[in-house]
View 1 (cartoon, rainbow, N blue to C red):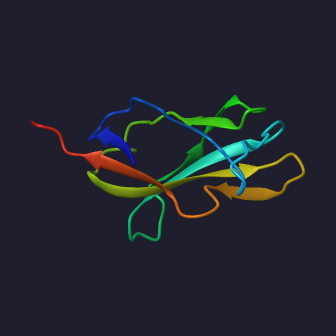
View 2: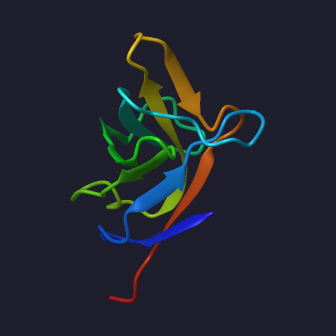
Length: 106
């Protein structure tokens, strides 16, 4: 579970994308998008470009922007990769990255 507080934009969400065998995926020449939706929702709250931190090691990062965490609740997130040959794969391959946006003391 990745925890954030309401309206925070730090820390960024950084993960290593791995294949079904647990091996880091080489993302050289790829582009990455980050998607996040509330649990049970059908539309994305966030659909934005993510950054490659280390393409060869499969490390990606999403830097939160204003509005991404403006609603407390449980969310499901994923990274969608478009490889250089136009093939598309979503990570994690099974399930989602759980994200919790918690309320703050006013």
